Structure formats: C-alpha cells, structure tokens
Length: 77
Image (cartoon, rainbow, N blue to C red; front, side):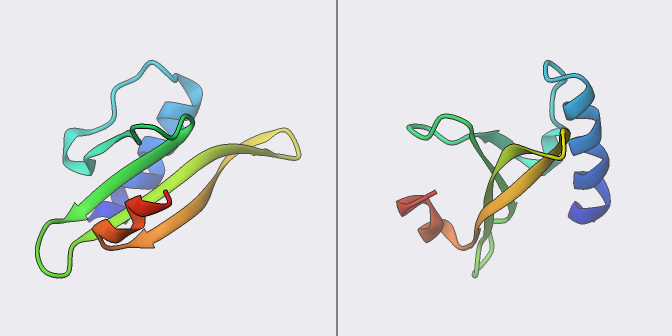
C-alpha cells in the first residue's frame, strides 16, 4: 500500500512543492537535517522508517534514499 501511494505522491509534490503529503504516508522533514525527509510505514516491531532527499538527475527531479530501517536510522539521517 505504501509503495502504491508513495510514487504518485512524490510526482505530485515535485510538480507542486506546496502540496500536502497524504497523511497516511507520515512524511515530514527531518529535524536538524535540512533537505532530508522521513517517512514511517510501520510502528510495529520492527518499525519501518526511511529518509531521502530530493536531487536532480539530468535536470529531472528524483529522490536519493539515504537510510531505510528502524528508528535507529535517525542517528544519521
């Protein structure tokens, strides 16, 4: 479910950076890490978290995954 919603949400956000993220994706900026975003897809054990940043590849907007794992990824987002 998350993957099915995440890619279209990324495309909409790239076209309109002011557009809100779907609440069920739990996306927000990482505190203390400008330009880095986080998403939570599970609070159960093990929890599921990921961080990424927006980049340009051949003048196209894309994302670079930084960390994928548990809450521990926030030590170095």
